[in-house]
Image 1 (spheres, rainbow, N blue to C red):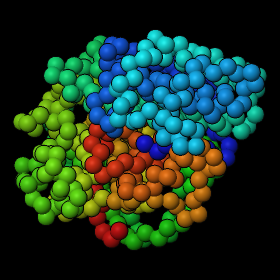
Image 2: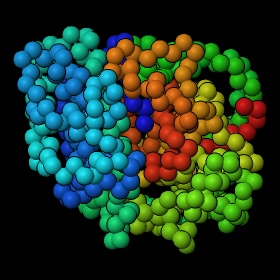
Image 3: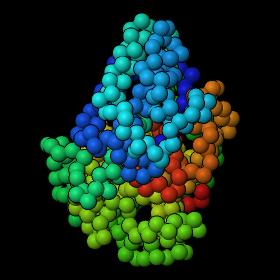
Image 4: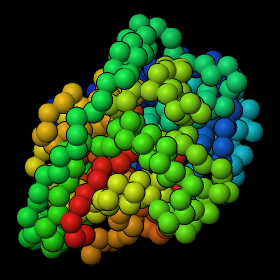
Length: 432
């Protein structure tokens, strides 16, 4: 996910910054509530982190960047936590090896919860006293940083539970049952045929502007020339992706980038990561479910998205093309707030749908700086700039993204091999 950075000013939300801080922190705690203590410690792969680590790291962020430098008389909770829960901030100090986060059995989960309470109280006191604008901006950044980790927590837990031979559900209860029922009821339905919406050539502006919060990688706003193109009205469905598989998509090297084909061979990829061998079911946060033919395919890598696009006679849109279209749409969709925790079908029609929510959409754009980009000074500047190599941009958010976290200019990014995120495919046609 974008590792966030500092906007020049905090946003002006409808609720106070203190209320948003409390709401965000409470939601993270609620997301962990369905998990047993054992679930919170295990790390299923180097790219994922244990739930306990997410709880602690998001807390460390506020301690490191807000309370430590800006709260007079603040007393560090535990000096060892900086080493354990720093992620990649070289200028802050050494850190525990990322791939070994699952070995941090101590501190116990209860102590991490106490750590969160300690930091919450400290930030609450700071806000009650009236935080200066630069401190308020750091707290705003911390809120968006934690929202990123809310999605990461869910995707990491999903991968973890999928590795369990019992294939357990993340949570059991009315909400999960309702989501599962929706998935099962839609299974077997077909998505309406793809319709491509033409976009004329011209000069378009992309990137963030204004005083509302944004990550530094969304700036500066700038003009781009786009040749005429067309964008599909919805993401690619499970049924369409299954056709790709059955047509030999994973056994036809001509469809794949060289590194992608090498990855397919090395990893033995034959289908999306959570699909069963029969191609009629998938593992979800609600447990095993029938595959919904009409819902967007998700958990595919950039290599898979690109190969499918080539097979289908289209291509992935550039991020500028995607934003030029999305900027004219309302930010509305299936987000974390809806609690389905799974992408759903678009409901028919031929209008542009699902640009926001459901699944992140891979673009053909390499993750690189916008013209005139300058990272923030100090450790905060390590968020985005140093990751602008060898990754691709995704747009639009997913069913695990908080609704208040997304906007048309938001740039997510992952390596082209990444599959465990809620990432899907929307096709474009015409000159890139």
